[in-house]
Structures are given as C-alpha cells and as structure tokens.
Length: 232
Image (cartoon, rainbow, N blue to C red):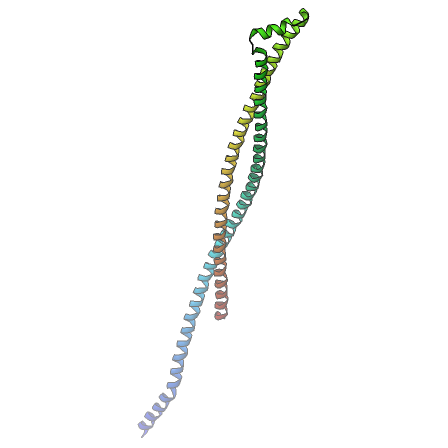
C-alpha cells in the first residue's frame, strides 16, 4: 500500500511539473530567437552605417564634381560671350574694310583713267604737241615752267596712281586677314559651344547620380532609425 501511494504521488508530481517544463522550454526558445533577431538587427545596422559612410563620401565627391563642372560652364560661357563680341567687331571691320576697298578701287580706276587721259592729251600727237606747247612759251622762263609743269603733272598722276594702288592692295590684304581671323574665331566658337554642350550633359548626369544617391541615403537613414527602434 505504501508503494502504491508513492507511485501515485510521483505521477501527480510529474504531471504538475510538465507545464512548467514546457513553459521553460518555450521561454528559452523565445529568448534565443530574440537574441538571434537582436544580432541580426545589430549586424544590419553595422552594414547600413558602412553603406551610409560610403554614400556620404560619394555624395561629397559628386557634389564637388558638379561644382567644378559649374565653374567650367561659367568660364566657357564667358569665353563664348567674349568670342561673340570679337566676332561682331571683326564682322564690322570687314564690312568697313570692304566698303573702303570698293571706294579705293573706284578711286584707283578714276586716277588711272585721269592719268591715261592726261598722257593721251600730252602725247597723243607725239613730240609735235609737246613741242608746240613748249614753243608757245613767251619767254625762256615760261618755257622752263611749261616743261616743268608737264613733267610734274605726269609724275604726280603716276604717284597718285601708285599710292592709291598700294592702298587698294593693303585693303585687300587687310580684308583677307580679317576674314581668316573671322574663320578662326568661328571655329573657336564652335569648339566652345560643343564643350559647353558636353559640360551640360555631364552636369545633368552627375545631378541625376547625386539625386539617386541622396534618395538611397534617405532610405538607409530611415531603415537605420527603424532598426534602432526595434533594438530597443
């Protein structure tokens, strides 16, 4: 009878302790799960911190690139304005030189015609007309004066033709030089415009990259804050 009571008591005691043991096991599993989750949170936070540091470095680098590009664009725009001003000035000089050259060429043609007409008047009839002009002098002094006059007039006309011709050639050379300078500046302007377009595209690309990085940065920061709340 005593043995029976002992057995019954043992069964009752075992039955009473079963829920406690099961609860203790569940609690242990929950603690382990919580610790595992906590470790995962901490690991993810560390990863996010490293990612944020990298993003911040790239944001700074891209921002610096954009500032440099903006400075280059400002210099390129200043060069374009200066080139535009020089182009306008050169075009005005070409117009002025061309107009002056046309007038000079007309004057040269007129001077040549005047010289030819005067020479024809003097030498049209050969030495006879010249002799008549000289023989019609009233005195030896008048004769010398007439001879000098004929000589000086012809020489002056030739000199005028020569001077006007030289001026016309100078104007032609100046026009050629101005047009060459204009072509060089137009080429330079085209280069600067292409450079400015390239810088604009590069700036847009870098700006898009910066926007994407900042979006990623905000997401990582929000996730990091959420993990910090979960860790508490």
